[in-house]
Amino acid sequence: MNVIAIVGSPTYPDHQIIRAWVRTLPPDTVLLVGGSHGVDWIAAAKARELGLAVRAHLADWGRHGASAETRRDQEMIGNGDRLVAFWDGSTDLASAAIEYAQSIGKPVEVIPPAIKGAPLDDLAF
Image 1 (cartoon, rainbow, N blue to C red):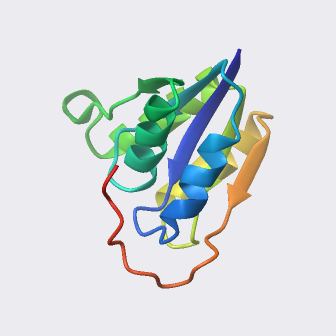
Image 2 (cartoon, helix red, strand yellow):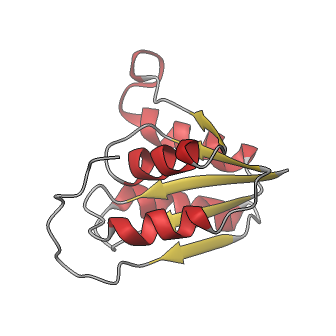
């Protein structure tokens, strides 16, 4: 089984890169996503369309307050074999996830957008 934690910038502009990357995954892949708008939704929708398993790790705001997203990301990364970050350089949360994965020895792949500043008009899955 291939378990991949996914994080990404909410402003990541190149949705086609996300979909194309998901299409390359083997059938035994499990995607761990945080359930946020943008990268998480797009990757999860494409994975489900292709019959891949998706596990959502939602932030527990009531229990963890302001650190809920960070704790969620750390849990996903800990449960995954590696981290893939669709990061446009704009969010501290994605940056923190990348740094955390590296600090615990998880392989990290950062996929930058090909289109800088493209509008986020392709949210349909």
